[in-house]
Image 1 (cartoon, rainbow, N blue to C red):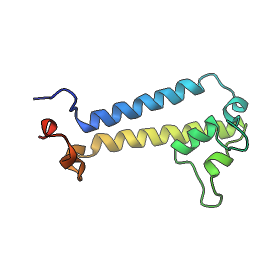
Image 2 (cartoon, rainbow, N blue to C red):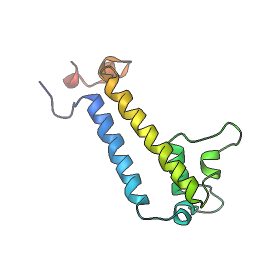
Image 3 (cartoon, rainbow, N blue to C red):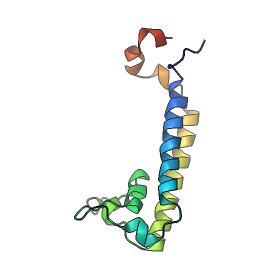
Image 4 (cartoon, rainbow, N blue to C red):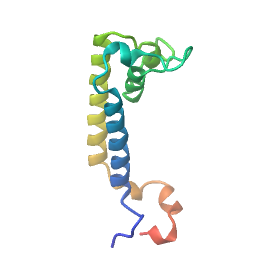
Length: 118
């Protein structure tokens, strides 16, 4: 029996991730490399292409904050960022699909309200 407000953790997690991925894609839709690399507020290095690289875990041990600092207005950098992001999304989806039910792992199961206990 499924109790309202106590959905399966896997579905909740996947829905959450898909919604945020879609939001990122929509925010970046139809923007060119220059627009994607535009910094939010100087001296910040944050930009949309930097966010794509950051979420894709596209970084380097050679440079601090390479995912942000390396986010330049270059179509090749943008294409590489999207490629890395898509690979990370595919990996995460495959991992979640093949992992055991998240409810049986860790102390979070014990932290559920009693009405959600299994």
